[in-house]
Length: 134
Image (tube, rainbow, N blue to C red; front, side, top):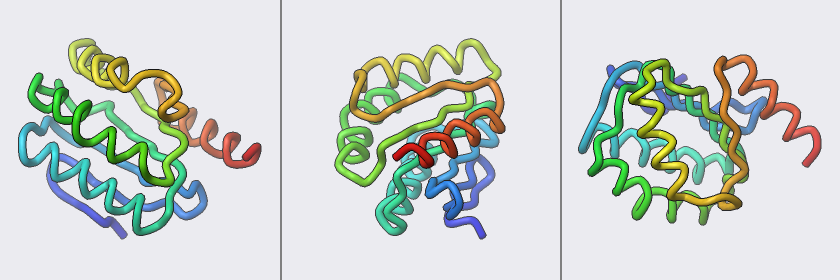
């Protein structure tokens, strides 16, 4: 059952992966974008999730304001939680992918173990392998 379910995003907890799964369905900006990411973070805290699976294939471009908010507000809070790994299924749009890369570049290496994938099945497999080695 989804913890957060809107037209642009579904967020749920996958017990087997100990992961919050964020599946973006459409473009979102401002309050809708931020509310969705905050809902995912609330779910991380509620479940003690160590993994984050972001399926961004249909997300769309992230606005400059939302990129700034992600970097200065959301990520600092995220790294203070139980999260250790992020598996990111890359957006299909080249422009959307660039905005995601801008966000992740600002976060810096080492804050969270992050890996990028072309398919969701590859991302799931990586998270399973990480959980097995931890």
